[in-house]
Length: 148
Image (tube, rainbow, N blue to C red; front, top):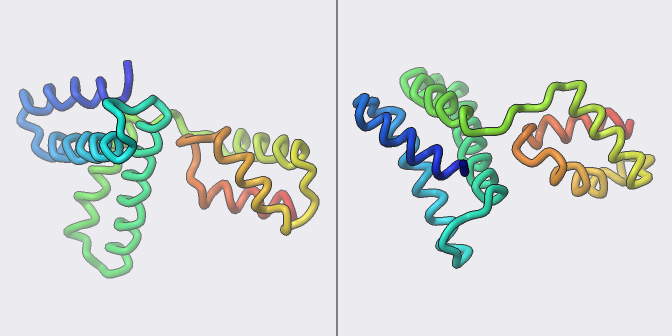
């Protein structure tokens, strides 16, 4: 079952349960996926493209959450945390720190990276391997540690 199918199914369930928050979050993500499909000129997105859109939505909410916390807007923080929680259900299982470190180590050896100047090579090789399974900033830190 694709992410879109799961979203549609959960949207129906949320409608029946009158869960407005979950319903609006799912609708926003479905709209983003539909917009992406239109932008790419396709009828439907591949699993990888759906995951990309979903990751982007979660990242946007995390960024907003950080900004709202800094600004002291606790009224908005709670709603965003709930949205992130709803969206995390559709994301693949996140890698543990050890798993991420192992993937980065293997990739560093694959590309023959030896210094921080090889950071771009390593990042471009690692990111497709972990698509949606770890945050880019977290990967960046692990790669920096590995190359230091």
